[in-house]
Amino acid sequence: MSPQLKLIALDADDLAVISTHVQDARVQTTDIVWRQGEKRLVVGMSRLDWEQTLAGEAEPRRLVSALRFDRVLACKSRNIDLAASEAVLDLVGIEFHPQDGRDEEPGGSALLLFAQGGAIRLDVECLECELTDLGADELGMGLGVEGRDERYTSSKQD
Image (cartoon, rainbow, N blue to C red; front, side, top):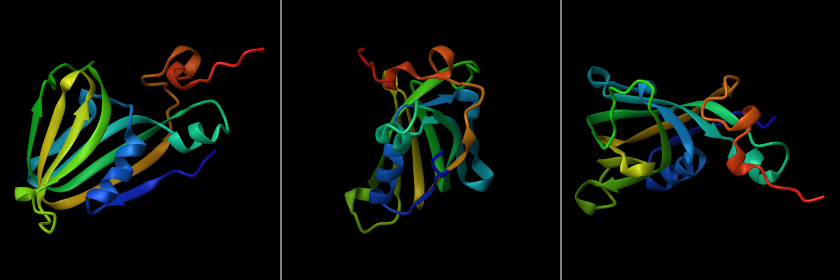
């Protein structure tokens, strides 16, 4: 088993690394928690273990992970029904856009982009994001047949 990740992003380049690790993560709308008083957004997810998958070490597996953004001034969503408790979203990636288009500014907007046109925009004082793996996805959230994500299982010919 590969070690669990804990990644921190303080700039757009760091966030691009986290975005790569959360590509194709499955997110239930009930696992999106906006704590306005704490200026924090937490997103629970089932993400593909890309390191293990690309290394071909074993069958593709998913990990339960938490993605946290701090110093969030505002949180807005588009094309996401947060009231639909059973809805599952596919995270496509995360982008950061500096305030006023100036790279030297610490503030800006982080965009969580989902399949089917859904998005969450976070206006942040400065970029502070953390991705932490919590363990294997034993419950198989968002997995294909028999606990494997069939999209990432290579087909072998005999």
